Image: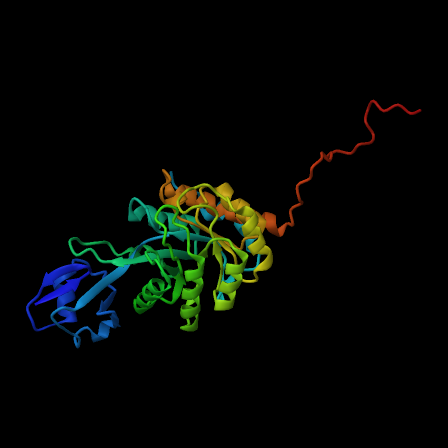
Length: 66
Length: 275
């Protein structure tokens, strides 16, 4: 199945929860916040959120800015 | 060259007599906010934060890079420094609100610099959308420091909406041109009761001093520090300028005059003849 991760189409094998998807695709440990289909998912809920075909996921963190 | 140790500065002692800067009930000794963008490396950033003696720094929120490991910027920001997350990238109020809510989820507080820009040439803030975002987020308990174009009506609307400060631009973002809208910032200083933080365009310590002399409560600088040859050194220079400008303001400095006014007595000259 396919998901949209940070604007990129990615193929994943089901079933997977959010924590597994983050672990698979994020090269940084600095990931702080995840949003699935426009809803913010708290870190302690990442295990419970099942990722479905067509989901839009955003992974964001802090960077330098003015 | 390393920065001069802070205990060698007589200025700092004087400024301690000043009342602290209060934002949303939190007290700050430093009136110099530092942006963390554009630094060549994290060492420069860390040294600049230290040299600036800043107590508030801004950061941005972005998608993580899926292709390569990125350093965590928070590791370079001391724990006692308040994190102010900007909403850069937001083109309207809704996008700013979304970024603010995401930022809060990270667990580093709820201080947000609202920045709504929908013009890629001038990067001017959209005051109307900024007011809308402030209304929504202040009602949710966020501490809002909105970046704005210095317009009295917009500033009043921001106060009404629950902003903690008003942050008028001095000139275009990253332009280093100083206080191009000085008269309008002065109006905000005179008329708005919440802290005025001059943001954007301050390119030299003299610009920061000028803003503080006018009665601005604080300044925010990023580009001028981050892109200087020696960031930590200019960060210290800015910190001193902010303190000097603040002291000058507190001293009630006299107004400029049109005519000369001799500094020495105009009587008792050696060549005076009695008649």
